[in-house]
Length: 233
Image 1 (cartoon, rainbow, N blue to C red):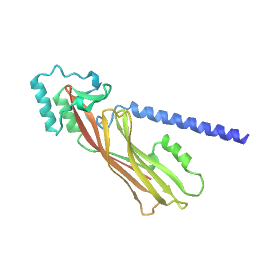
Image 2: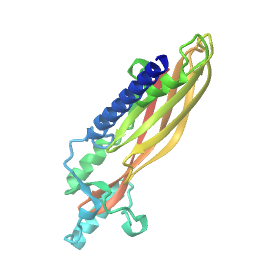
Image 3: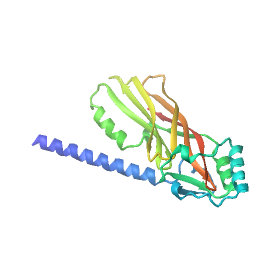
Image 4: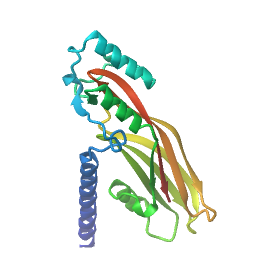
């Protein structure tokens, strides 16, 4: 009888964890404001690569677009060399003015700082349930901070091991790029942890550069933005 109750309880935990993960993922990807667009007032369209058209551009308009790219140190994208899938979602700007507004408003690095109490539930919480033995002994806990990048996320993870007295014995800090990553790239620059004076907690840091394909009047380029994430543990 006890075995059946235990199995049933564990099944409920699995179901709730899966449900929670599903809801969290849905909420994340439903948010259209990401680290490239959240703080801009520029007008643009999110379009599939296959729907982008630049056949109508005159030589003068094409020259203006390339000169605009050059102002921001950008290079026109050679789609044949990049070989991007046709369903890649990109940002498309119809006017040079709106493109410049976007570039000017998104130059500042993105910073995401998370306190321990704000650490998201879902996958992290379930990992903690499995790796902590609920006794006054060594335990492992994973902390997380995220930045939304359209239909994908930049994630900072800090896996922290503690001994019986609660002191940190080891940390493993790293970043990942998950979700729909077509047209978006992540390049990690650093990931590390610093302990506080008591050695029972600290803060994890991770950062790098997120790049995204954008178009101006049908001509593509790649723009980048620095991202730094941190989480207390």
